[in-house]
Image (cartoon, rainbow, N blue to C red; front, side, top):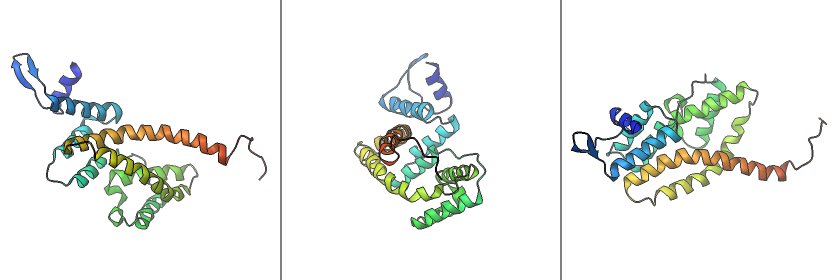
Amino acid sequence: MPTIKYYLREGLLPAGVLTSPNQAHYDDEHLRRLRLVRALVDVGGLSIASVREVLEVIDTREESLHRKLGAVQEAISQPSPVELDPMAVKDVQAFFERQGETECADVTASNVTHMLAAALSVARSIGHDHFQDLLDPYLEGLKLIARADLEYIATRGSRDDVIEAMVVGTLIGDTVIKAVRRLAHAQVSREVIGEQPPSDEV
């Protein structure tokens, strides 16, 4: 399979045990790593360089599992090329201060916080200057999802199983959340907006 050979050449997969000059044996660990690489590339859309960074984080043994999960989240989060609006940056800083996350004062020091600042910058650029008002209720709602995520991956067995479930679960979960959010919008809009056409009255 040319894809596997490519991953081997790029150092994303360890070499198998040679059984003949042209054949090698691959065990369950190789299959696990292959599934992870394919999830990062096919589901996450990560570049080979980003995949390599994620794998380096995963293979570091000295960090606590909590810190490793945070490092993996950083590695799979792609920073945006959007120019940051200074007001959006202040909104993000104020949000993290309200949440007691004072280490996030520099939003450009983290891919995750940079993503948030970039999203708010885009919102401001198209006239949605108050989108930051949704951050606190979003966080409260997403804590329920985060707890479900962590309870799911915490039962996966070994440390490597937990980390793999976290990576794959985050990448696939992001897509699932988008789809289920649209279903939620459809259900809630019936209650909040209803079926009547909008009024032209100001």
